[in-house]
Image (cartoon, rainbow, N blue to C red; front, side):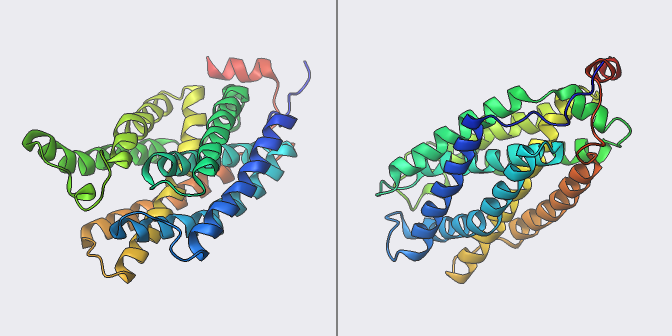
Length: 288
């Protein structure tokens, strides 16, 4: 029985797709931040776009580059972070492709949406979840389960409190009242995808199912990065003079700090390259 590698090797298509994602993300964020008047969206949305662009440029892009390098070298830690950052960029550019007013970078947004979607799906499909579970076999999971359930509940309540009354009254939700958006795009994605994903991940991890470890790693990285992006959006909104409820500032700050602490703990608990190798037979036996 030969030892398997700690992470699947990245083949050329994945390396090419992530490298192109890096380049296009830099182009999109730099143009959005530094070309005056580039965005044609409603004034109320501009601070959110600037905050998202800034966080993507200074945090997500370097994190993707570093994790891509580590994952290609066989690091399971790097592979998990690479998937999570790819998930953040997928969420980001899906929202740009559907939410922002049409501009010269529309095809770049669509390309980033497609690249990150297929990279994430393919990358998750290539990982052996039993290896990650075996690497974290003795690691406590209660905090991760509780955090993911908390995120799912709070996000669901936050958006349902807005879109629920508007749906019943036949009016536009407050978040899009001053825009030309036909529907609240972010709320649609969160309620349809993000909330169920966090709930499912928590349920699988609570039962210590192998895929629960994979989903938890990806969602912790993606969710924490997005939480930091929301804080950047709030900073730009406050600078623009837009009112932001103190409760929302505190909520996202606490969730972002807690998420950052948990994702650091989770990633550090994964043994480094070489120490995390295990036989496939042993991994499968531990999963039973």
